[in-house]
Length: 484
Ligand code: HEM
Image: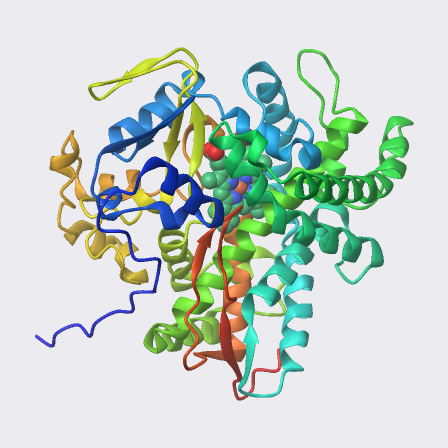
């Protein structure tokens, strides 16, 4: 039997050998929360950090994760820090609300993200993919290029076209995009102190700049939404067929009321943020991984050449792209854009043998769980084939037995994987994101080849999402016959 060649293990901040002090942990978290992790973080079932006024519990064990995220989700609402930090931009949007307010919002949003609706916007995703293709064709062959910039562009273009029928080259869309980049650069500096109960450590000038950027984004969105909101209120249907059109039509089954204007601006701002920042991060890391695994990249090219129809405007164009889907799955495992999910213990509880006080922070980290030494075989390797049915069946029980309830290999694979969250708060846009990713990866793999830029090693940092501090620079080559 020929031995399998070593697979690519992407660089990430080497965990510290020993647990740092709580204060050092806090200060390193301000730059990037990945810097505060230490070797045992990747092995333990549960950890805790205490600072004056702050009790934080990190939960890794699948059975506990399921309790917090799913079985007892109401006892672990979203952390108030999220609402505080994001309210200037998102108001009271579905991402941060809890209880009855969230329930109503989720019921009103669900129809916009049903499978049929997501399939319906495929043609718009295709338009954005073609625009991306045309931009990349303009690059000098083999030039080094920061693919994060391009992936952010195409993901924002997709979200603006599918939600608001605005391509990113329209001036309103461009202004939203620019103001958002300013907001995003400031967000981690503002969120982390709040998370540790140290709001006074937030630099006031940064808070002010971030509020200005948020107000500008909301003002621009309001201008786009207002005429359509008024038209819908007066019973005049508009022709757009986008996600906003569905949001304008939905009504609460018990009260007959839909979203009011401010609520709509909140939800659209949130969809813009949640819907493009995450996909941009995951697609950029996918390309980094592919550039370092030329064999996988060639297989993906063959799949895209043989099975993907770039002219097809319905989702059947991507239905057979198994490897594209698996590459994306594996990129989401190694670089989950939402690297930690922050909850609060509403009433106090016991987790394992620990008494967790009411108001304590309970954090579930897809980053840690998906690289957990006891839950995954070869946790740091890029191996998109691990999701094949046969590979799953063969996977060694990833020490699942040691973690509690001895799940089957397949079951532990499923439960130790939560890039889209889990339980009632699971990502509403997961199907949207997967459709988008298969399309973008196939479009790219069909026409282009990516190689690492020698000497450039992207440095992952945990901020709003997991991004590269120094960008993801790759050499982009055009393939023969890759004109479209
Ligand atoms: C690769 C892309 C994406 C990833 C990895 C991702 C990840 C997540 C995660 C982990 C959550 C749960 C957060 C928590 O439990 O604290 C979430 C929630 C959410 N996501 Fe996504 N997301 C992605 C794309 C999208 C897209 C494309 C949209 C919409 C167009 C979207 C909209 C939302 C919304 C509205 C929520 C809040 C749901 C609720 O609380 O009821 N996401 N996402």
